[in-house]
Structure formats: structure tokens, C-alpha cells
Amino acid sequence: MFITAEIGINHNGDMSICKQLIDVAVEAGCDAVKFQKRDIDLVYTKQFLDSPRESPWGTTQREQKKGLEFDFDQYKEIDIYCKKKGIEWFASAWDLNSQEFLRQFDCNYNKVASAMIVYEDLLKKIAEEKKHTFISTGMSNYSDIQIAVDIFRSAKCSFELMHTISTYPMKDDDANLRLINTLKEKFNCNVGYSGHEAGLAISYAAAALGISSLERHITLSRAMYGSDQSASVEPNGLRQLVGGVRKIEKALGDGKKTIIEAEKPIAKKLREHINIL
Image 1 (tube, rainbow, N blue to C red):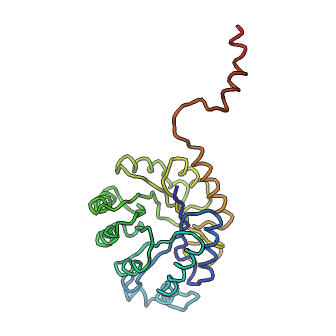
Image 2 (image 1 turned 45 degrees about the vertical axis):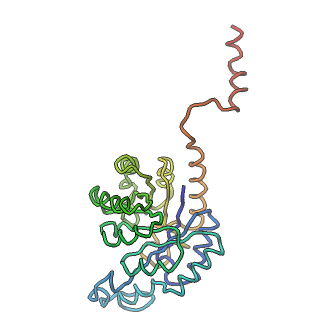
Image 3 (image 1 turned 90 degrees about the vertical axis):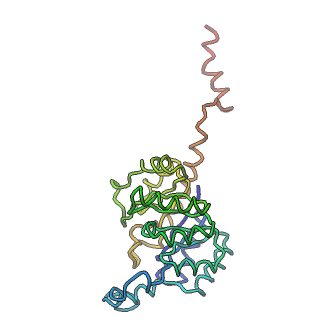
């Protein structure tokens, strides 16, 4: 199972925090860390960006959004640091310019955020890169998902869907994990899980359903500034999660009924009286 620690914007524009989060992911045994990239002038309207918002960076939405975005030099630093630490990194682009920006780096994966699954031009741009892509399915219906699947299959770009509920944090009652198997059957592809819940139990349950990948937001502390922090896993929780998921993965086995070697002497002993009779 491919496990991604979603740093997203939880670095709060601070490279020191970002590197600490990468370290947390490495120490926990994650396969990759993920970020989010936006051209704020394309993703948001001028009216919205000029509207008031108190934040550590100023008093407008523009200052807040700009404060959360890393530039080329900072992503280059991330690229170098991840290679040094031996962990993959990739990002979800929210606009065409941002996907073009990410092409400057030699990432092995792409991600379609749930909000962007209906952005067909972006899907086509991502698919043409032929990199394995994780496609989150929050806030979408079967028709939306089918269009995305068709785009990636037409481009001959490998992908997997990710069952997602786009609430932060997600309520346990909304998880609908049975949809994982429904998506597998309906679209004939691997399906992962991108979770936004508090706690670990639902992610464990998703792992037990045989997901191909798992993504969870991570944070140094849920008390930190940021809209995604409350739906994120802290360092100790991430270590528990990855350890538990790896055990579940092994425990699932191959589904074939056999008598394992360790059972044979036990069977002989416990059935000995049957042979005597």
C-alpha cells in the first residue's frame, strides 16, 4: 500500500515547519509527502482576494493565500531535501499554470484534488504527463468520475481513484467506506482512501478493505493556525497509523485456504485421539 502524508498547506509558508513535517513522514515510514500548488490569481477572484481576513500575514485574503504558497526556490529546496531523506514528493495543482510549474521538477506522481475532478482541461494536462495519478473523488458523482477515468484511459496514463469525503474534519457517520468496493467494481481500477477524519480507526478500516493507497493530512500540532489542521494527524498518531496499516496489509494475506506449516504439528497433537479411536 502506498502511504502519502499530505502536508498540503500545513507548513504555513514556513520552510522549517515543512522540513519538520517531511521528517515526521520519513520517520513514520510513509512513501511520499504531498503539497498543494495554486496560482492564487487564477484560483480566486480579485474581489475575494481583496476582501478582509485577519491572518499572520496581514489583513486580506490575498495576503493569507500568498503567505501559504511556496515559490520555485522553496520547491527546489523541498525537492533537494526529499531526495536527501529518500522520500517521494508530489503536489496537487489547482490550475493549469500550477501544473506547468510542477513540471519543472522530476516528480513521479500526480494528484487530482477532489475540487478539481470536474476541471477537464486540467485533467487532460495531467494525464498527458503519463505519471501515475491519484484521483480524489470527493464532492463528485459517478458521471464526474467516469469522465475523469475516460480522460486518463484515453491518454493511457495509469491512475487510481481515491474514496474521499470532503469535509474537514469528516464525521464518522459520513465515511461510507463500502463505497471503496463499489468504486473498484464500477470503474475496474484500484481504489485508495484519502481521509479527513479525526482519529485513526476509519483509516484502519479502509486498509482492511484492501485499498491500494492511503493519504492523510499531517501536522505538528492540531492547535496550529490553518483550516486543515483539525483534520490532520499529529506525529505520534502518524507513526501508529503507518505501523497499524502495515500490519493490516500483511494480515490480509492472499485469501487462499491452506494449512500453514505451523499448524501441522498442532493439528497432529490435537487430533491424536481421533486416530486412536
